Length: 299
Ligand SMILES: NC(=[NH2+])NCCC[C@H](N)C(=O)O
Ligand SMILES: [Mn+2]
Ligand SMILES: [Mn+2]
Image (cartoon, protein in one colour):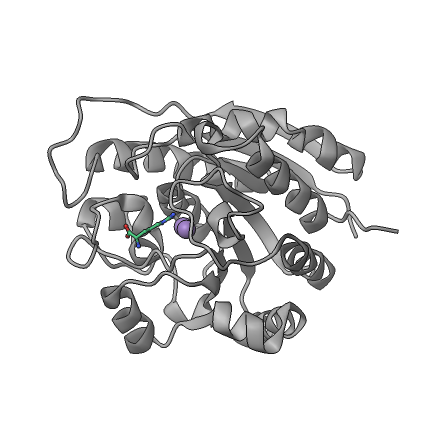
């Protein structure tokens, strides 16, 4: 494939959930060798460093924890992603908790008017402040991108919605809240849960995902990869682990098939929490999967 100009931006955000340490995710991923790995594949890599996340006093809003800081951080991220696209580069975002997908997608939506999104995750992240069991905004970014939820989140970069429900494919879901389940049905969102992955196998799941986006005639596809989509045996360093997940090999296969499809135009790797990890194992998996997504092959 063609060699890319990849622009990396780190987002040390930990305010979208309760467990500290995920703000160190971008460093852990860099330390695991992300930049060297991508350069070795012949890509040009421009590391733009980290976005500054403002910290105020602990938020009293238990329905939307740290709303103000999350809005502020995501607004900065959206502007950064927009700038990367304006330079003609490929945005690669390192998290940080999954609330940062709000900013990434808001930045992408400026350019891509029919954007597709692959949500590789144990969760659907389709809660709003009404349905959330936790008040954690990292459980809400997909809903926000569809235009649902608190206006301060939804209106980042002013217009809404950023995404059409029929342009979303969720892969790996196994922990879905009642309100999320309703939304999936109501909006007809395509989900390959662990049930479908078990039944069809990852090859068919990815073939069908790729075909789905080709039929939808999307103008770009963003991969939002939450490391908790993978089984916690391989990625223990995440804040909300759910057993029974996608295996390491299945995930590599998925990334390799996405690479061959030439469909993906931006990516983010989120929820790496080095404090909860074992010897940076989770960041190592993130970087290994990045390798496959950007063209590494075994032979
Ligand atoms: N990005 C994540 N890890 N999200 C986990 C969300 C967990 C749960 N569904 C919640 O809304 O609180
Ligand atoms: Mn998750
Ligand atoms: Mn998630």
